[in-house]
Length: 71
Image 1 (cartoon, rainbow, N blue to C red):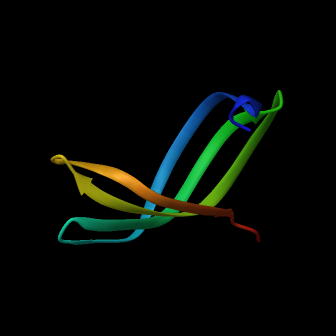
Image 2 (cartoon, one colour):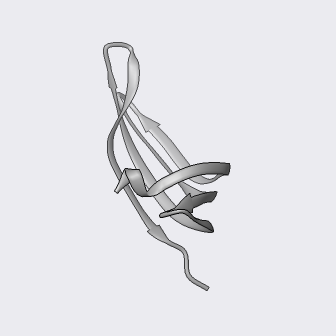
């Protein structure tokens, strides 16, 4: 799957919600991306949620979910 993506020309994250509770945290927002998929230019927005866990003094992604935003 990752080999399908190339030439990312822009990426932005629009934060909509976040919280930190002890050693756990989450972010939710919109990812705006312009890239090529299988050689074809595409621009799309994903609604993305990530859950983080603090390990060894740093934050690591424990879970990620994203789906395409439709009109």
